Image 1 (tube, rainbow, N blue to C red):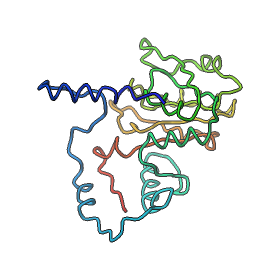
Image 2: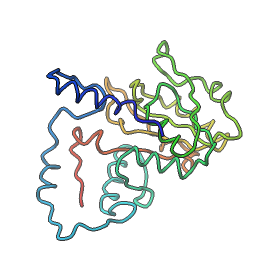
Image 3: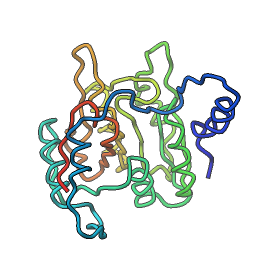
Image 4: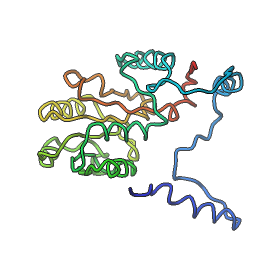
Length: 237
């Protein structure tokens, strides 16, 4: 499994700090603003007599709370359609392992989050990149480019919306074109939407789970860590 190129920089940064060098971290999305007090208070005031195993899918009260959050974003899901993991990365790894066999292919617009490659390799899957170019602002390539890459081993398309590292926000028209090709070839669509609330200048995010006709093909990846400092979400334990 390839090492994360992001984490590979950490030992060098640590060594530089020990030599008295000031290091400006650009490798991970570490929050630089205070965690909402409601979150800190919830941890300090947690009244648990026994720390025990939770439900394998995550506490039901939490999953119900998540459905209310998604409803505000026009996404209709039920608690039994949600699985809580230890992070978006684990969710994506589980999803890939559940849907792709060794040797299967997943098409990913490039440049992409480096660890997509690691997760795919861990599952024995093969990443097939489709190139996005800066001249187009890293917009989704024409669907014809996807069609060229589809083989009998193609099982999925993976997108990040808004994109990491490009910041590109997919339009509804682009997502509908993706929907059509997913439906045509009966593929899975992995939609990494962890940066959903990082939309600026009036731009609106369109979730892949609002696309009609591929509800059974779509796997949404999300993460509390990317937005907790923004929305002050209340998590009931």
